[in-house]
Image (cartoon, rainbow, N blue to C red; front, top):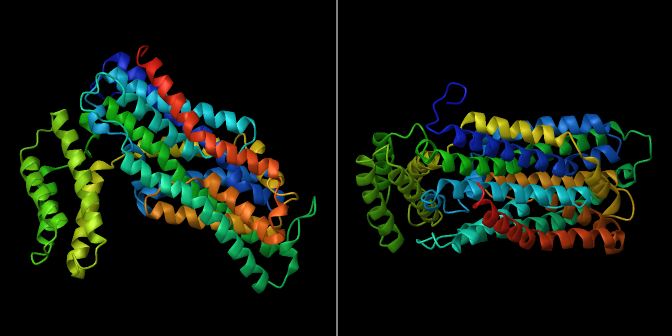
Amino acid sequence: MLFGIDLGLSSGLIILLVITVLTVCIFEFVNGFHDTANAVATVIYSGSLKPVVAVVWSGIWNFLGLMASSYIFGMAVATKIANLLPVEALMGQDLHHSIAMVMSVLVAAIIWNLGTWYFGIPCSSSHTLIGSLLGVGIAFSLMPENVENVGVNWKEASKIGQSLLFSPAFGFSMSIVLMFLLRQVIKDRKIFKEPEPGTTPPLWIRGILITTCTLVSFFHGSNDGQKGVGLLLIALMTFMPLKFALSPDFQPATANESLTKIQNALPANVSLPELSKAIETIEALKIDVAKHDATNIKERLSLRKRFTILKKNMDALLNVPYVISNSSDRKINVAELRTIGHYTSFVPAWGIFIVAISLGIGTMIGWKRIVVTIGEKIGKRHMTYAEGATAELIAASTIGIASQFGLPVSTTHVLSSGVAGAMVASKGIKNLQGGTVKSIAIAWLLTLPVTVLLSGLLYFVLRNII
């Protein structure tokens, strides 16, 4: 029992659950103060907001970003993080080993985030988390009890890797383009000058900078906050798979109704192997859903896995225009697939809230180290108003689009590359500080291998302790 709620766990496991959830909150707290600079550097260095006001403002919008994301974007980013590991297979191993796996991911990510923050290096919390997940997945694949020979979901990892790799390049190049357009359109040259110490920018410039700060904060919460939610989802499924493998509102009759609607909306006159396979999957699922035993962990985990696969396959078919060309049938498929997706991506409201609170509070603390790097050390001079606004506008747009498509991206790398791009657009590559750029690049290259190794070693150790 916990706060009068029967969790179906022993006292010892309840203590481990509380520790695990607290560690998730610590990870998101560290993520908050590690990434604060992405939003507040420009408003602080331009004199648009006082530092304390800026970080509190950013913290509030980070909190709101995550709280609103379930309504605006859904929990697709959180689900992708959770699906990096084959959760269905991992639940079949010793519970204490699963707990060791979750704790290894969290502790490795926290250690690397704290280390890079201490040295003032803008480093991606997303890369850190992905590396930690890969590390324990690889370590588990080497374990003798892994009789099913499962490990990292490399297909999902590849997609996430591509989004993390592409987003900084996109931020750098688009910042150059936007700076060029601003120079052609805006006649007031004040926006292209460095802020004078102790002065406040003109009202219209200040309004733009506060707006971009708000947008970066909101979209950072909507994207990075979901990574903590994804970790929480893994933890909850580890301890209570019966409760969290599928959404609590899962009803076999309703699920079968959705499956039937999807099947009926598929064309009968299109010959395509993928379509035939989807129909076979739906028919088999309908049979298994109808005889579903809500007290059987293996059945619920199996349904979760098959619902996930069906949704991926159907999403791929919907991207082929000629397969489902009827607009009404497409709408039915999209709507019912959203219902199917809800069954496998449920996170309790309290979980989203505590992660959002942790992120928001973390954003208000420890901001100065990274802010100094972004504001003073990427370029050989302070950012101009235009450079700051450009970097943040591009960062906010990139993160917002990524959240819409359920792609985890690095706010830190997008913003840092945006700052670099804006400064290159002003005075060329010579405007960058080679030492800082080199440090960021080294951290970028080292993050994955270090966190993979660190989390893997932690898993080997903790599985024999917990």
